[in-house]
Image (cartoon, rainbow, N blue to C red; front, side, top):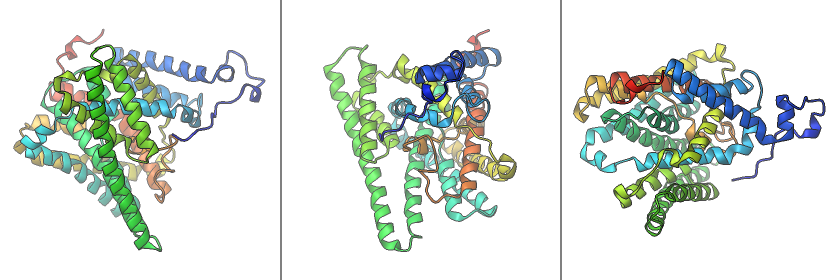
Length: 425
């Protein structure tokens, strides 16, 4: 991971700051300012959960948004950069856990569902691309927006599953489909870079280089994931203590993510494959705690604060048609694929509607997990600024609305939350 310069203000730069003000506390210790925001996030998340029955992550993200330049400017977005390795670890923990829940055998037994996993992302991407292109955006930028829009957020999905503990067909399909469209998004972004290279003056050399790079990333990530899953299996045989299992799993996640970053591979794909490989080799012997233990849960709160701090509504007055095109094009594409294959794959109409709504939290993971900083522009060269800003606004909206829709769908539509009646007063 490239070194990132600490951007917290130095004590000497703000001599007039009151010691007990936020600036004074940040000047005294750079960790303290973020710790205060972390504390507020936990309290607000619990309050919204108890009072309004909202997912706790909504409170965490709202806290990050309120602390960001979007609201009170308590923290700057560049203040997150020193925390990027920990945020990457939080993402990696959830992605590995998601991989450990995947059952590829189900895709072989239910071909219609396997086709659903492929088509719901593809239809969403094509729909968003077509809508934005018809609205006058360049095809290359519209296609990239469609590629990013295909993905459902694995961190939101898995965190919500941890919280409301649903059990049933819709939940299992949600996890499988989320993993599938995350991989599809990553591969499509690589393919987009290959197509974008075809417009270069020396297109033949650029195209060959981009295509070779994309193949290397995908194949290398698969091999790294297989190796990490095998390594975890062998180490787990030697260390049979249940208490040591989360530590061992976190160590393997860190190792795989660091190697993927160092070798310019995809940490997302590598960690998904690592989780799937470990589950296949170990079966029920693999015990994966939610968030890989309490330390992972704390990192999860930090992750959602960071996502909240990246919220933006800048220029929404001018860009709202494209934002709506993104949101509703994505919804329409996913609904069409799930609806067409619902009955052949064994879903009722009510279950299909629940799955469609549960897939709505939009993911920024495909970009964030490969970025050196918590920004998109460096990782998406050539994209028009208005398209990028529309993507950021749409992601902001769906990060807030999506978890609420998904919770309602799994609880009320799918009736897969047996603990829903035991809500806190």
